[in-house]
Amino acid sequence: MTVTVDTALAADARRERRFFLSLSLPALFIVGLAAILPILWIIRQSFLTTGGEYTVGNYQKVLSSGLTWSALVTTLELSLGTLAICILLGTPLALALASARPRVANVLMAFVMLPLWTAILVRTYGWLVLLRRDGLINAALTGSGLTAEPLPLVYNFTGTLIGMVHYMLPLFLLPVYAAMRDIDPNLIRAGASMGATLGQVIRTVIMPLSAGGIFSGSIIVLIYTIGFFITPAVLGGGRVNPLSTRIERTLTTFQDWGSASVLGILLLVLMALIGVMLLAARRLLAQNTVDAPHA
Image 1 (tube, rainbow, N blue to C red):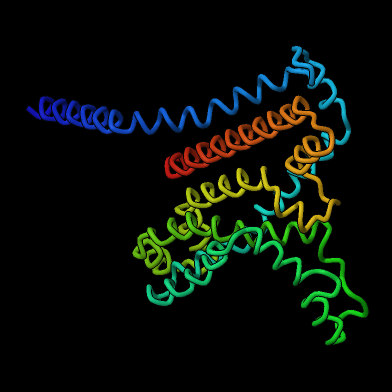
Image 2: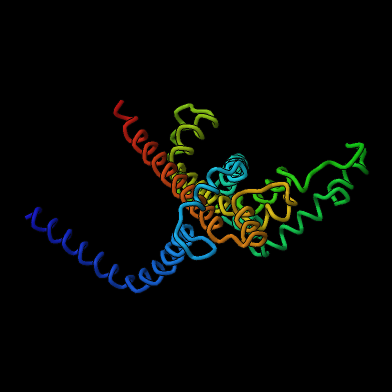
C-alpha cells in the first residue's frame, strides 16, 4: 500500500513539474534566442575579415598578442581581488546583520543596498571626485598631516578595485545574509552549550551552513566583474586595461570587428570556466560536508 501511494505521489510530482515547465517554455524560448543568437553572431564574426572572407587569422592575431594576455591577467586580478575583499568585508557584515534584531537588520540592510539605487556611472564619477589628487580623501589626509602629499588613489589598479568592490559588495552580501539568516539559532545555542567558543561556532556551524550563500555570492561577483567596463574605463584612466576595455578600443580605434569578436569569445570562455570551477568546488565541499560525519 505504501509503495502504491509513493508511486502515485511521485507521478503527481512529475506531472506538476512538466506543467510548470510547459508554462515557462515561451519565456525560455525568448530568453534562449536573446542569449544564443548574439553569441552565434559573434562566433561567425570572429572568422570574418573586414572584407567578409572567412579566416582564422583573427584568432592568430589576438592570441599571439601580448596585450591580450596582459588584459586577461588584469581581468583576473581585478575579479579575484574584488572577490577576496567582498568575502573579507561581506561575510562578517552578513553575520552581523543576521545576528541583529529584525528592525535593526532591516535598517542596516537599507543602508547597504543604497548604492544599488544609484546609476553605476554616477557612483563611478563620485569615486573619481573622492579619490583624485585634489579630491576629498586626499584633502583630508594632507590637511590632517597624515600624508605629506596626495596619494595616488585613482587612475590606477587601486582606484579601480575600490570602485568595483563598492558596486559588488551589496550583491555579494544578499545571498550570504539570506543563508545565515536561515540558520537555526538552536544549532548555535547547542554549540555554545557544548563549550564551543564563538570562533569555533563560526567555523564549525555558521560557515559550513552558509557556504552555499558564499558560493552563490562569489559566482555573482566573478561573473559580473569579468565583464566590467565603466569602472575600469573611468577610474583606471586608461592605465588599467581588462578585456572589456580592450574590446572597446579594438572597435572604436581600429574598427576591427573580427578581433573584437575573438576577444568577446575569450571573455565568454573565461566566464564559463570560472562558473564551472566554482560549481565543482561547491559540489566537492558539499560532498565533504556530508561525508564528514561518517568519517
